Image (cartoon, rainbow, N blue to C red; front, side, top):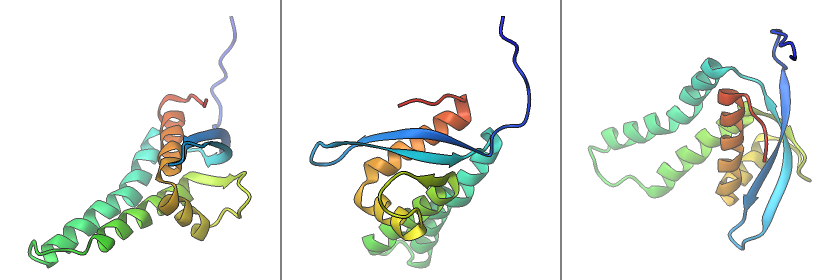
Length: 132
């Protein structure tokens, strides 16, 4: 029987992200994630993704339920997801530099990629599994 050694978790870990573009091209690339345990992941999600929800509620409250421009709502989502992914990832194997501007571009242009990154990260942090 293999012995389980309860030690320090890694600072980072690698995963492969796979998603399909709108023109049905299957794309995959490598990502290095920052390790977080379940509680740390929950805190990260609340701080970054929850911000978009709070901003939308504040905009609606300020406008007294009047029309809020869709671009403001969409922008708060893009910003929150970008912040989340910047903190979740340590780097990637794409041909463009890993930085906030390029992560934001990925979120805006390829929402399926952002969703795939999030799914892989949550699965790894919550269940301790990696895979395609």
